[in-house]
Length: 636
Ligand SMILES: Nc1nc2c(ncn2[C@@H]2O[C@H](COP(=O)(O)OP(=O)(O)OP(=O)(O)O)[C@@H](O)[C@H]2O)c(=O)[nH]1
Image 1: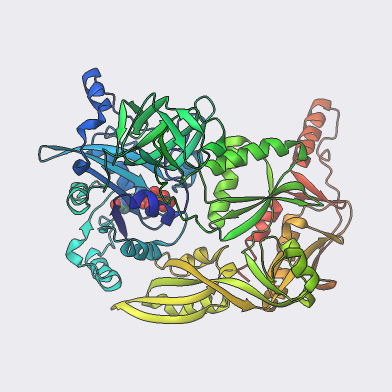
Image 2 (image 1 turned 45 degrees about the vertical axis):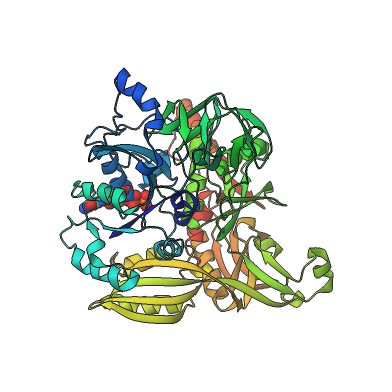
């Protein structure tokens, strides 16, 4: 297990994007605080006053760093220990993933939204300001991220975590790090974040190995908005990193993006909760509230400067590339506007989600959203439900395919020859294209040798082509495969973990497009297309995927008064079929006798159940039926 810690503004500009592309910064707190809520330190008034004065942290006493690692490697636990060690939170048994504030994060135990925390730390008589960004683990790209950090010349501190585990073998991991990343093994820090072992060395290394940020306090203000959240009472809270100058309460600032002017109502640091300060100085990271009311006013990547003191805007962020697209529609069209506003607010603090308006004959007006992966999509959906009480229909996720058009009519319509298709409903017919292209990724798998055979079979079943295989030590193998993206987005990681008893790791990076024989497949219920399940599949897999979807749908559909034919079709050709026999569910069957109130209760419950159903033709389908079906797609 290993963790990277890196430095400088890179943490805001690059590292955070690495992990998910999701924005950095504090998340709004929703609902009741969980029982395990941490105890934040309460400052005495003298201490508090001193804390407000950020001028006591000159640039040379500031370090900016991120924790980057795979899902579950202990980033948030290490962050907890760093918060405790620096006195930011009291040391209690309840400190579990303190920076994970969203309900979904605590339920799933994964970080969805990166959090910033400014830690005040005394070391050898000097007071340091250490800005920590706990990155989310939604995407499996740690190896690729390491090389990005390397190219950006960021300092990298390898940290080997979980050394308390019985089967931990830190020496072997050190050797692997040396072999794969060319980092001398004596630079590795071995810790147990859970037990708090050797955490001081991490802080020490952050101070010693990471240089202070390169900024100028005497220049006019130049602040990068690297995240923003929306508070219904205070408006937009923008998280800022100051590259130049100083910002104070009462300053007039301008957004380089919108050219709108605002007055700063509050500035402060995140410790880890918002703590107002008098000013923020270049090199520091904090938040700013300036009366921005609309979610579109605080664009991530925007530069803020002082009124009448314009500056060259900072380069901003390279936007994260969505890998998976899905349609999203309100269950009830009258909820369209509420859902629109919920999506806007959520995308404000997760800028890696792309949104296009979309509409479908069957599902009405909605959107096509782009996500970094399937887990990202699931989490976004869960947050909509939990935080905004929204009920949505999600269509089968698809990857962005391309088609080179041959039909001059279509070329005219699209105004280009090569189009990207993010909605399977718009997949052009074979007679109108020269070729189809599918996105591919270069996957890196590191596994104990004993699982290599099974993993190679799994990769081949996913149409992957082997590019490389090396032994990184006596019993560990690193495999590189070129995968079609659609073969890994749904459940590849789960399959890999289960067949390697959890030991194999998986990373991937974008590798462009390759020619592919693709077809559009419809799923029909009694002859009516199920819009949610229209999908694009590889020709060779159409039959097995179609069959699997029909079988799974059969298991998820309740019997109804009539027979239901479930069919998979390519054009007019039916390639698979299942039948659900007729049946009448008589909820009153057990209620012979006269208890009318009990009868009414049962009928009411049945009516409520019906609200969770979607009607396709005359067939009623439970909403969650489709989700269950999706899981079968790439495993066949
Ligand atoms: N034994 C042991 N378990 C640890 C250690 N550090 C973390 N864990 C456990 O590993 C699991 C994952 O820890 P997290 O801190 O949530 O990991 P993460 O990397 O932040 O996970 P994501 O946010 O999902 O990317 C939790 O069950 C922790 O209790 C450690 O040093 N030793």
